[in-house]
Structure formats: C-alpha cells, structure tokens
Amino acid sequence: MRKLIIDTDTGSDDAVALAMALKDEIELLGITTVAGNCDLETATKNALMTVEKCERHVSVYPGCSQPLFRRQRVDATAVHGKDGMGDCDLIHPTSEASDVHAVDFLLQQVKRYPQEVEIALIGPATNVALAIMKEPAVMAQVKHFYIMGTAGFGPGNASPVAEFNVYADAESYVPLLSSPVPKTIIGFDVCIAHAFDQTMIEALAATSPLGKFLMQANQVLLAYNVKRTGEAIIDLPDAVALAIVLWPETVLAKKSVYAECCYQNESIYGQVIFHDRMDPLAVPQDYPADNATVVTAFDGELFKARTLALL
Image (cartoon, rainbow, N blue to C red; front, side, top):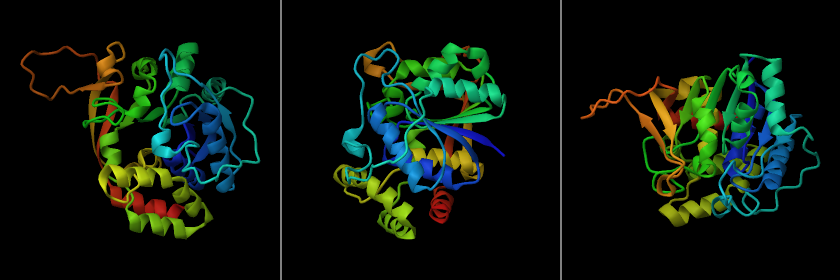
C-alpha cells in the first residue's frame, strides 16, 4: 500500500484535501503542519478537528511557525477566515498533537520506509526544506513530492507572479526544487479552473456530517469569491492536488521543466519560472536537467464525481 504524508497549513481547502486522504485507502502515515494560511497553532487545531470529523486515528505533528528567512509572515485569513475554517465556530478538537516536531517526523518516516514515502505539500514548504537541509541524504530517499504551489503557467494569487504557498516562504523552494526526488507540481492555474459551483456545494453538504462540516468551513472562501468574481464558487487548490495524488488518471496532460524560484528580488519574490526547452528562444539557454513535472490539464469532472462519492 502507498505511504503518504501530508504537509499542510490547514485552511478550509486543506481540510477537504485531508478528508479525501483520510477517507481513501491510502496509508496516511501522519499529517505535518506549518504556518501559512493561518498561524501554526490554528493550522494544527484545524488538522486535528478534520481528523476527528473523519473518525480516523492519524497523528498530527506541528512544524515551523515562521518562514526560513522572510521577515514578516503572511497569511490568508482574509480568504479562509480568522480561524482558517470559515469562522463558524467549528474547531473544538478533543485530541492533541504529537510532541514530535514535523521535521523530525518526516526524517523518521523516510528512514523507516526508504523509497516508499510520498509527501504532498499543500502549504509553504518550510518543514520539508528544513528536513532536506538537516539530512539531505535521507530526504533524497523520498519516493515523490507532490507540490500544490506556483502559479503554474498563469498569474499569481499573492502577487502578479507568485502563488501564495511559495510567496509565504520562497526560500524554502530552493532546497525543495534542488532535491533529486521526482516532483509533480500542481499550479494555481490548473487548480482554479475546477471550482465547486453552488450545485456541487449543496450536494456535498448534504452527503454526510463530514460534507456539511467541510462546506461550512469554506463559507468565508465562498463569500470572498462572490465578492471577487460575482459567482458562488469554492475553489479548492489543495483538494485538486490531493486528487492527483490519489487518482493519477485525473491528470490529462503534463510537461517536464526545469523549475527555479525567485527569492532575491522583492518585486518577483515567490515567482517560479518554468524553463521549457521546447520554447523557441532567440538566445539558446543551457539549463540544468529538468527537475519537475508540471500538470497542465486536469479532469475536473472526474475529480468532482470521485470527491462527492468519497465524502
């Protein structure tokens, strides 16, 4: 059975992704939390509550409360709520997080299962970057990284060129992208194209108490999108990323690239550039070997149907 760790900054879309993994047959070794959408303590409580709602016994391991070098931490509470979960008073976990740090847990599991552990990063990459920096030879034995991050081939959502997860800690993407481990990147452009509409939201809320919990948790996001687009939609980037982890057949097209992250220039901080050797450039470039695969097309209808059935 496949072995997975999810590294999350548990906001409302992360909760849907966690529930998908918790309800699927994949072996979820643990959940590691990181500051991003909300602070670390809140992200951890949100993960614990989601695990309880799924009626599973999976441990949660708190990690980094600050980015590697960024002076001021950014969050997305305007999108997900002050509590990261819709501000509906949903978060009252009865369980507690582990006292093992997320970075140590990651290293322990990779040592225990070399070439077997897959890691889904659906928040800033701080925990994974620190694990790589602490013991690079161990983290080189990760089987695969699935990364919900970057703007893909479209505009950013945190700046004109940067997606939030990278913008929150761009420096962490340097060791991540330099890792020899195979990497699948699910960019914001692909994720945003497959939002849940009102019909899907109502159907999911009616399926079970878990479905109702998840849709309530996304109420601030729903209001944010109504104001932003005029449409009653919930976009769930992290759930799209987990769908690709769980159901590889949802990937309709992908591209191999050399990816590098900008972190020194403030105006382009967090931009991830995909160098594509197929592009006709006036000046030939001698890029290093490709280091990632970027998803460029995704079966949104299959994703929605399977998510509805699963939850």
